[in-house]
Length: 185
Image (cartoon, rainbow, N blue to C red):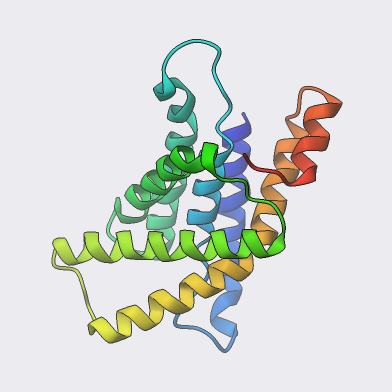
């Protein structure tokens, strides 16, 4: 249920962002909310008492792929492009979660910027390998950089919203306080 709630939250964010973003002066790039939620799901994958890591990361990765697929439908991109990227970002987020503590506004901004740049590069590589690069490399890199910076700025807000969802699904007051405290480890 927790992953489903995150998918619905981020889908709502993508809908709202998509409807108002074209009214803002920066219309060629937007923050990658899907990548932020996907990496958050990977960072906070709840441990399963039995079994390998695959059982721990499967539900969040499935949620990230579903969210990416919904993003593909909304953005009009080739089906599977954002879904593949979201799944990869979720798995990478889970792989680095034991060596990384995302705490504080500046660390969250830096981590979100790196996440946005990584997701943008993965999408650019997948599009280039399938022959779908529409513009010049300079234009693509400009859009990627702007999107990564906007993703970094949106990171603290998106992570805060995700932590509030986690607090709703906490099983004890200690878990609720930890979710609202902002430590992802």
